[in-house]
Length: 115
Length: 113
Image (cartoon, rainbow over the protein chains, first blue to last red):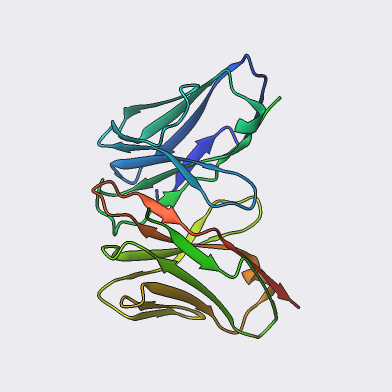
C-alpha cells in the first residue's frame, strides 16, 4: 500500500459543531503532517508528528486539535471553527522524521466548509 | 526568514512548446528540492525531485536543474501536452531537524491545444 487516505472527502459543519478528520497510511512512515490549503495557494503546514509525538505546531489556534493514536493514523479534531477555516485539509507522511530528503506523500484531502 | 520564491505565477503555452518554472530559495543548507503537480481538486503529487549533490535530473519530458551557488532550481517541461495543465509547486526544506518543507506560491500552467 503506497497511499495516504483521508476521510471524509467533504465536510460541512456549523460553527458550534465538533467533527474529526482522519488520515491513514500503511507505508511504515513515522512522520505525519497536517496542512491547510486555500484555493490557488500552497499547502500551509499546521502540525508535524514525529514517531507519534507532536513535534511542530505552527501556532495553530486551539480549535484545531491533532491526535496521533498510532503510527498509521492521524486525526484532526475540529471545534468551534470559523468560516475562514474553510479550506482543503491535507494529510501527508514521510519515512523518517527530520530527514529532510524524504519525500512527503499527500492524501487526497478533506474539503471543509464552515457555515 | 526562510522562504521560497516561485515565478511565474501563471504560464500559458501552446501544446508542444516547452515550459520553464523557476524557484529561488534562501536557506543555503537546503539540500532537497521537490516539485509537486496539483490538478484541480486533487492532491499534490511529486513529479520529480533533486538532491544537492547533482545539478540536473531528467525523467522523460520533465527535468529539474539546480544551481546551488545562485540558490535557484528550475522545472523544465518539454513537448507540453494539455494534461500537463495544473498548478506546480516547488519546495525546499528549512534548516531544522523537522522535515519541514516551505512551498513556493505556485505556478498555474495552461497548455492550449
